[in-house]
Length: 106
Image (cartoon, rainbow, N blue to C red):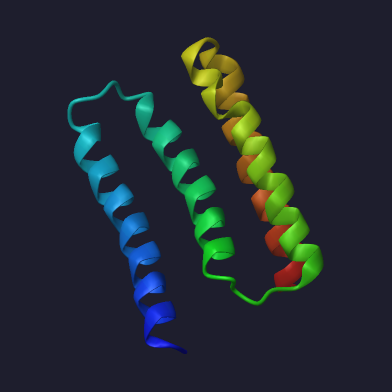
């Protein structure tokens, strides 16, 4: 790995870790409902991190991550106008991730 690529990868990782840390810090002064939103955003950002680092993965799995990312983009802001639909979205997201894990890990 080139030095330039290594520095870029470190930058990408540190950016994600800084997001998680600042999110945790921000939760102390934010409404409780923002916690699940920040976690969903962390999932979205982690998927982005995988693509930015060009992690070698099965093409089918990559496609599932892309679809998951699109779904999150579409529904993550439901909290702002329909808390119940946001809760349903988070429940469905959790179920979907469990189903994906079962497909690949069993």
